[in-house]
Amino acid sequence: MSCRRFFSIPVLSVILVMGFVYYVTLFVFIDDWVGLQSSAGKLNAFLFSFLASLCLLSLSICVIVDPGRVPASYAPDVEDSGWSSSNATETRKCDKCFAYKPLRTHHCRVCRRCVLKMDHHCLWINNCVGYANYKAFFILVFYATVASIYSTVMLVCCVFKNGDSYVGNIPLKTFVVSCGIFMIGLSMTLGTLLCWHIYLIAHNMTTIEHYDSKRASWLARKSGQIYRHQYDIGVYKNITSVLGPNMIKWPCPTFTRNPEDGISFSASRDS
Image 1 (tube, helix red, strand yellow):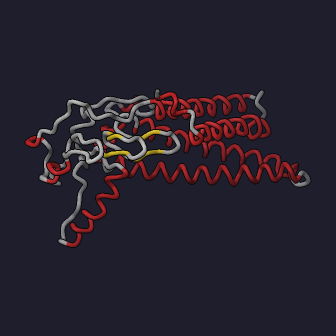
Image 2: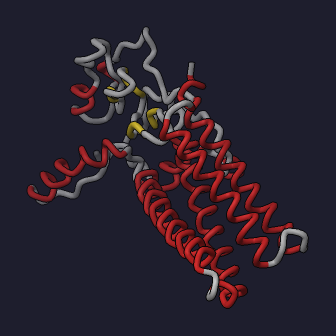
Image 3: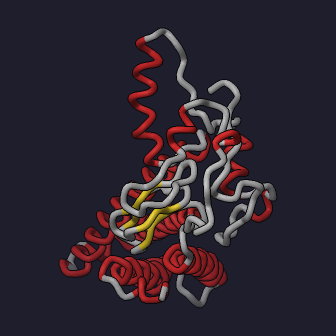
């Protein structure tokens, strides 16, 4: 059962961190800054609670949703395998599953099966990140980054207002400094991860494809050519292939089905 994935130390650790950040942001930072009973306090508490809810929803989808299973009846159509001749060799049998692998599909050693458009296996969601849950993963990183920065700002505002009261209180000062270091580190880590996946989405790449493309890019430069990822069909189309064609639904972590089915993908004619 997919719900069993929640009962792992990394996933429970993520939920614990989310709970800790939520508690200190509301009941320490915001409360000490403007007070939870004030209009500003209620507004900030509502906004942060909304962000926290979206983070929890996105995390749940990432954990529960199957990233993409290869249909048992799948067999490659060599004639329609893609734009370039290299696709024909990529559409091959998995040497571990002994079944045909569609384009952009890779075998996960942890899940012990092939995953459609596999990006990576994420320890923190106890699941693979693939075709069906990549959007939820990206939205989770986005909301978590925003929430972490929001919490850091609330901490800074709290310190500026009540900084003098921390001077003689060593335990409280230690707690605030520790929270500051933790929140800044968390914001930088999540922000870096967010920027990385924005880059991947803009180029219609997965993490695996990015590292595989390094050799192809090197060979192209060596021969005086310009390398372009074969699935890079333009920034806007690359984005809509992940987040969906409706911009209003982009912030929603639920899976948006698009014309690509996880088996066949649009490719650049230049590749």
